[in-house]
Image 1 (cartoon, rainbow, N blue to C red):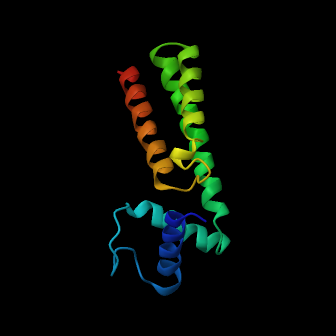
Image 2 (tube, rainbow, N blue to C red):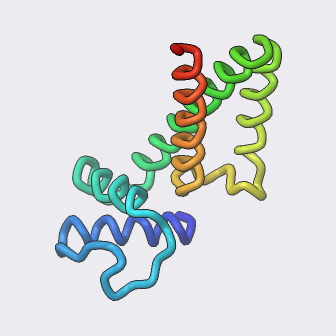
Image 3 (cartoon, helix red, strand yellow):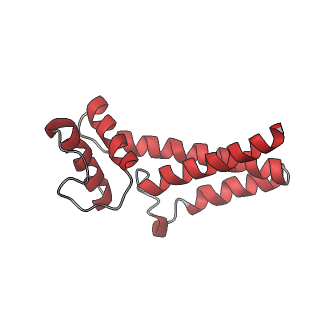
Length: 126
């Protein structure tokens, strides 16, 4: 378990089992969504890191797919494929903590790319 994973998981566990929400007596700069993800993981699957890592992997695959759709919409299918492959490979680099899929960046990137895709889709609807 990586340090940040442990902090997020423990904060989710404390929230679920002790009623101690994040940011109470603790300084943390992450948004509440990562703690909610870990709270739900603790509630559904107990103490483990694999459920949040699996969800992070699903987010990375979904983000890759959205990047493909964006690239295809803006340029062509080849550009979308290159964007998807580049993102997928970059997220596996050791400098990006590629072996840890449950960090906040994976989830934030997914929602950011989803917002961009929704913006482009709404523009086409006009």
